[in-house]
Length: 245
Image (cartoon, rainbow, N blue to C red; front, side, top):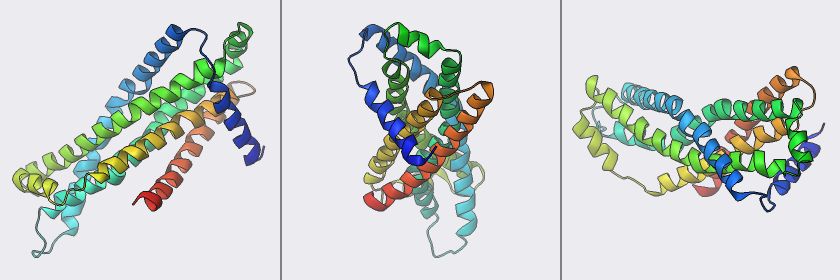
């Protein structure tokens, strides 16, 4: 199947989501369930990755800055900007593409193969709106929250390691965090997080919703969904940086 056919099916899926809900309470309950599953359930892995990314950034930056001419507080500035601009939004979302994307794809694929989606459609339920839309909306709500959490923990991880390893005292680290801070960087990171949130939910939902076959095809669809999401995230990362920076 060529890329244009895939793209057409994807756009038709998105179009089919926007219809009047049959039962608002049912849709709201599903949305809250997905927020818990996709957001709260991913906080642990995001927290661990963010702390270590900040810690490694501090260590490696200090290793490269051996000149006595450059103030040591510059290490904090580099860690801050690296975490906010790239590490927190991009790496977090690439990880979520694997965690969340495979879950969405396999869940919908299993429902398709076991004919649960067909049963819902026979009952008159718009399955695209009921099964796919809450996942995308939940991702758009929760992923920026996870990215902000990753920013905070990444910067804190760099501060903690810099302090305990005598690389950079926390007083100098805090000074570096405040020096030449550009608030737009946070806005840019949030724009990236909203874009990536749509990618890591909508693309796996498409592959899972359109699975045909059995358990083997579900596995292949999950793998394809994760790989495709990661590639598009990296492409979108470049495009957004080129356009907005």
